[in-house]
Image: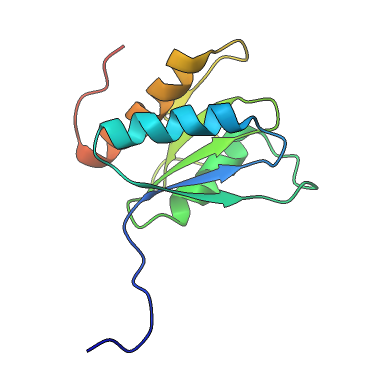
Length: 120
């Protein structure tokens, strides 16, 4: 019998700036899902001008899996674990990154969750 409350599905939390390209978000989510790890997207306010790493750390703290992704307005992606210091993400994409790099960021986030090695 259900009491009407929804149970939150364990997932990698993605904090996405509203100015970030939806294509970047799509590739990150696809990369994580290819590794079998679900994602949950939470937009941040337009007034929030933080960089990707500053978005990723609170996303990790908000994730039941302790892994978060930040996508800033410029499309840079940071992958963070809740136990790492705020300014030290596990992975950050280059400002000139493209779709394969964006998808890889999602794969890196998923591999941190699953404990699989992260290939260079």
